[in-house]
Image 1 (tube, rainbow, N blue to C red):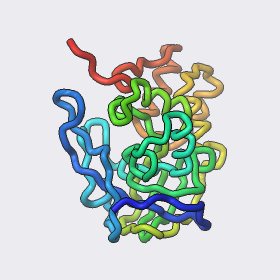
Image 2 (tube, helix red, strand yellow; image 1 turned 120 degrees about the vertical axis):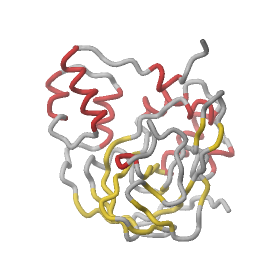
Image 3 (cartoon, rainbow, N blue to C red; image 1 turned 90 degrees about the vertical axis):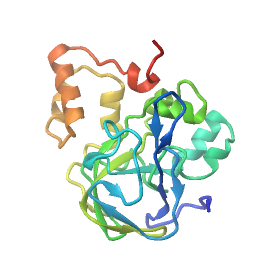
Length: 238
């Protein structure tokens, strides 16, 4: 059963918990679990994510540093303005998220934030780097690029303490070790393809996931930005 979101509630609470199963996707040979569906009963959260949730391509999705994906429902009105009143945008799950809420966004959430959600303790590990599967999901050729450019990416958690979560559970901030580094700032550094060492070097003091650390170190070494074509546009025909 799908339920729409009503007015923003305080304190922060989980408005939807969603799981997906890996299925053949739109392009030959591709598999995805981006089609997440809401679950009403409690769901266990373990080190690799929500029990019962799947990933279509474990090479780039899932794992301890991408265990749980959180996307603010606050962004949905803006997407409806941009794309029209799509049915997909009336309910949580359009972006493949596991958790949906209102009142938290990338300008407020910081890298390394620790939240107690239900009985689990989760730590913000990275912002989402959108991929081409969003293009196909929305039927918009540059949707992944739009999500990235907008900063409305959502974020991932790693699991510090397994537990369970269900709709209505509170989201409680327990620690904020890097208050100067909200996800909007960090996302701008990466996604706006900045090369200034004075901006990049301070980020290396953060507990970055290995791929983000390598990205920044490579920019500093080469003085050039990386090619995102394959991630943003997807595999190209031979």
